Image 1 (cartoon, helix red, strand yellow):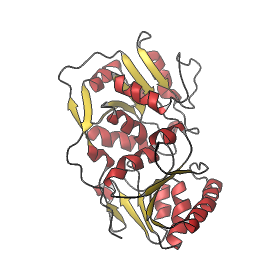
Image 2 (spheres, one colour; image 1 turned 180 degrees about the horizontal axis):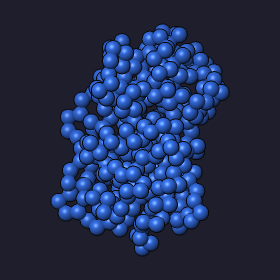
Image 3 (tube, helix red, strand yellow; image 1 turned 120 degrees about the horizontal axis):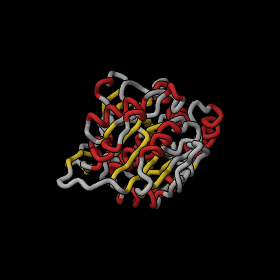
Image 4 (cartoon, helix red, strand yellow; image 1 turned 120 degrees about the vertical axis):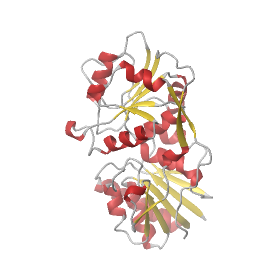
Amino acid sequence: MTTLLVASTGGHLAELHDLTPRLGVGARRWVTFDSPQSRSLLEGEDVVFVPPTTSRDVAGVLRDLVIARRMLRSERYEHVISTGAAVAMAFFLPAAAAKIRCSYIESATRTEGPSLTGRLAARVPRVRLYTQYPAWACAAWRYGGSIFDAYEAEAAAEPRPVRKVVVTLGTHQRYTFPRLLRRLVGLLPAEWDILWQVGSTVIDRMPAGARRQVPAAEMRQALAEADVVISHAGVGSALAAMQAGKRAVYVPRRRVHREHVDDHQVEMARELEGRKLVVAREVEELTLADLETAAAWSVRAAPGVPPFRLAPS
């Protein structure tokens, strides 16, 4: 039978896609939102696109719940796996009621405890819960491994000068990052070759060539060719940089500035810098020397990565 892999677009989908080879699933069908990222990442896969839901979007969850019930009635599935966010609940509720095995893998951004979706999933009978951090594993939350176990950093033998940069601020429609964009406009030399993916962020003095979203294939090529990547501290952006072999300069959004719902990006930046996979900096601290530091390292696939440990059915 088929496993349903359910995730919203952005970091949640990037995580689940990266984890899938370690989950031991066979036949699979993806459930996500229609976006350039999902179409590129899941090209050639069996995909069902559902209407997008956002943070605390009850109406959106209810819309997707109707689709989930229809899908689960029309075909048999053996397992539903999700990394979130709200769309997970739309599928867990009818799947658990039908006694289908359900697994929720909390996002790697949650270094100290579960998200709202994780707390809600914990209330659904028969949903098994997994954390990517042993520090907060408990009877309810099993430690399965980390998505970042698959990567390791190494110092470059001959660091190259920084001249070509990719800036990616994420594409979330609700949360923007004008503080970082203003800082970079004033910091980066005009003669450098810079690709700007700014999402919904708008400032008075926009950089030349700024784009809301760059097609996935073009972004992959740009990341591969860049001397350094500067990113907001989202897990999807971190994974994209690592897959391109780059140790990104990683700048967290702050709740106090209304840049995100909470400060989980601060925790994420601290975790990845501890693994030497990023150079984490606050907006006000960022200097050109930080870019040179990041460019002096590369990231590669770690050997012998273990499976993500899901409990047997």
